[in-house]
Length: 127
Figure (cartoon, rainbow, N blue to C red):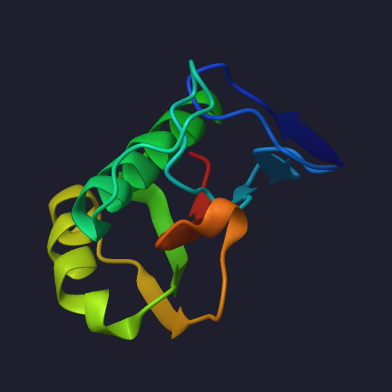
């Protein structure tokens, strides 16, 4: 059994996918989030710091809509356009998710949707 999660407090999907799926009421898997403003659909910021902050806000809102929070993170995957941005991204990421300390993978990719600098997806438990 799965429950589809879509909240107006995070960007609407720009393709055939949902913001998140909860499986058997135990785990939530989010789609990769980019730095879109959920109200305007516009990219927020031109720096890795600004974009990472917006991505983390979007993820926090999706987790809340799923009945969980960043404190229940299990795994994150970070996709960076340029690995030279790792330290700056990591600083903002740590401000949002540091206390929950999930497992994480970070990879450099050649291109991201809408040519953003960062995309992050998460897996969290649902209490």
